[in-house]
Image (cartoon, rainbow, N blue to C red; front, side, top):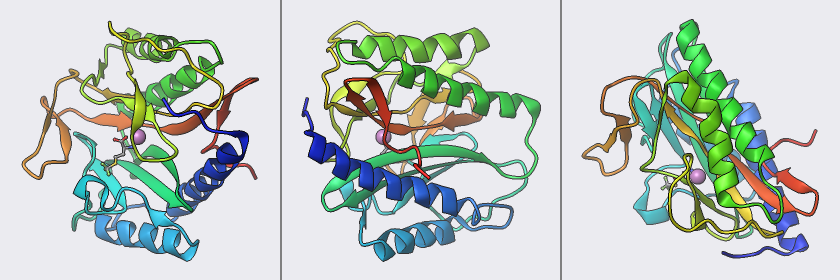
Length: 249
Ligand code: MF3
Ligand code: CO
């Protein structure tokens, strides 16, 4: 577990703020008829224009700036030529490298009208992310976050993805510790001041079962039901938590 100094936290915060601004602005581009490839290009240009680099591109040979995961795709969808349609659920995940400091954030967007059930899925997933965030405090433990997240999701009967977790972040895209979205046996480290983690519940309308497509990346639900994903980069600070990817206006 790598601890960050106050000065390093400030630099990671700058990277996170650029990422949050990117998410604010990309919403104008996301809508019916938008092509996933164009969104990826838009995001890459945005990041380069702000003197930063896409953090995912080239990471373990990932080929793009964004992960764009549609409907039953859970995470790590590789942008392809596909136009958004009414009723789609689009998860966008992105990381930025600003002067060597890495941020990570994701949101799921409804395209046009979605069903009340799908709206609820988005609401509950986002709520579980914030419950996890509020559980962050120095001296607390990883399991506090996991249990806060799962307690929001489970009463709704959704599937919590177990095969992928949140993670440490800041100096690279994935650092220890793992931050599971469910309570599991095994290591349960304390949260030291200066730890930076990405908290990222992935929630399926159906079962928790997922599989990876032949492209080696795209994670999809086995039952074909829809999925949602929200993610923030969060620092452990004396006062509790600092949501680095929450835009400071
Ligand atoms: N937020 C994603 C994750 O934690 C980042 C994926 S990075 C990729 O899994 F480059 F591998 F896509
Ligand atoms: Co992540």
